[in-house]
Image: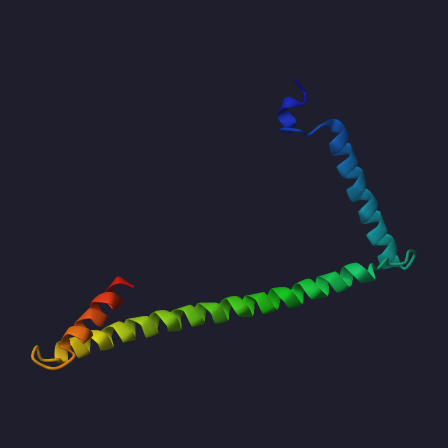
Length: 111
């Protein structure tokens, strides 16, 4: 009954373990600030963080550039469609190539 209020999968042992970890970490930080303990460094981890941040920045730039590229392609597609429609409207029915222009416009309309 006592465990029902603590949530799913949380036991007194896990709770005590988490509290102990936080207390130990807080004690370490206080000792480091007082100069009584050395701050530990993980060089491989720090390099990994630097690489991750670099890749994240590059990925964000790539995403921005791809969005701009997609917008440009959509604009180009719309402009091409408008040009084809303009040419189709401009061609007189008796002109040579009217059927070809109309078929191109029809095919482009399906894209």
